Length: 146
Image (tube, rainbow, N blue to C red):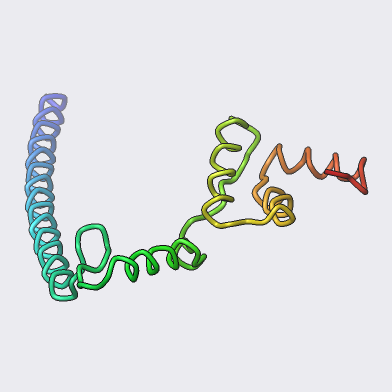
């Protein structure tokens, strides 16, 4: 009889726990719907602000002006290193050397890194096994030549 009471309590606790889980799931669903609605509203507001500022979907101004002025501005943006300030040098951990080199070369091209700066920038991007190897190699070759 004791066993039956425990089983009855267990059944009740399982039922109660399942009910609580259903309620939690419903609350989460409602929160998700609310967040989706907020995101939609934010996107609409950003679109309206961009329209008022005269910015198209690519982030470029839609204002009139001669083509040479617009070309000059885009050329100036491409030369300005601050326009890529969020671009970070790829880090090398010792795996996929070819992929890392490809990314590093693109980074250097975009940032306009000079030949003299490339070696220092490359050393900064080493981590883990790759950095340990370089420190060992540098100790063995105190005056390396390129």
